[in-house]
Length: 390
Ligand SMILES: Cc1ncc(COP(=O)(O)O)c(C=O)c1O
Image (cartoon, rainbow, N blue to C red; front, side):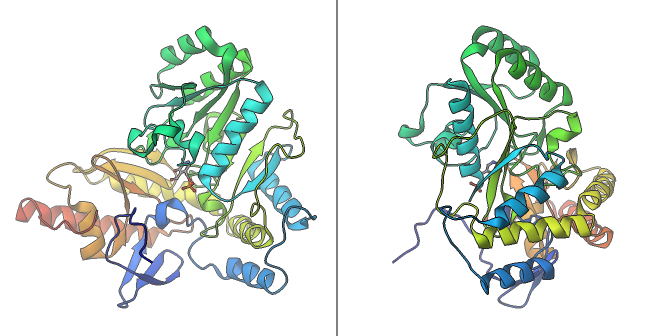
């Protein structure tokens, strides 16, 4: 059987990982400033996280949601405490798309309405509703086109207010990433997030904060919307929640009642996933990683600002983006193949930096040195032609 060839891949096979480093099968060591799409939160192969998973594997790996799973309650308690949303309710699932799919369903069940507002360049996943609210026609199959999705310009207060004044009474939810990841590290303004809250309250719609990439401590607060002092009705979480173990969830406001069978999934909240997610939160708390993300994010941004060739540096905490336009387009590939540093990208010229929250000043200095060296070598040699992978 062949693999269904949907991913363009680098010719690199990772064999081992620790902290912010990964090693390939040829023994090359790489610095990981991308965390495999922002997934690595507490650092690769953290010993406490591994032990949590290993100990659980020796007890029971899986039983379905037809029995009590006390680890789920333990996880909900810990997550409530660390996020400050102690009175919210947790539903566990397996991926970011599934989290958003369920968030949108809850909003529709609760309000009895169908319309959803989402924003330009937003990415919410690839399942049917999640992809329908995503701004990328190339990944929508004909069956995914839903008339009830209204896509509005990001950070445009006037258009949002006008649309809600016209049809707010039929809107089930407004879904937004506080910082768009795939869209290229575009940051929602505090005013825009506050306006969403105001309009949702006015018209009885639910505010869904897609915190799959920007949440879980990465920006220096547990949820990105906390920076704007705004509470969402539903937070979707995935990526950093398991540090590489597939686990996701939604945190749901206490006024939204649950009903048996309204949501469900076979694997959601299984014993292994809960143990992995608990391991993540325990390390985050023990090692003050949210504070480290705030401090290291500030340091990283200051250092990037010292490089005049980088344009439009933005983001918050350890979710940072900048533009490397011609003649520096080769920068990302060269960082990888010449300096052994992984970073991410977004179209057309954005480099995304999403390291583990345990990243150190020295590791940031290594990235900055490599960027400086690479920029001066590109300047010297004219436009570099090294373009391996994507
Ligand atoms: C903001 C956001 N939401 C949802 C998703 C979908 O998550 P998953 O790939 O786990 O389904 C992603 C993935 O990149 C994301 O960045």
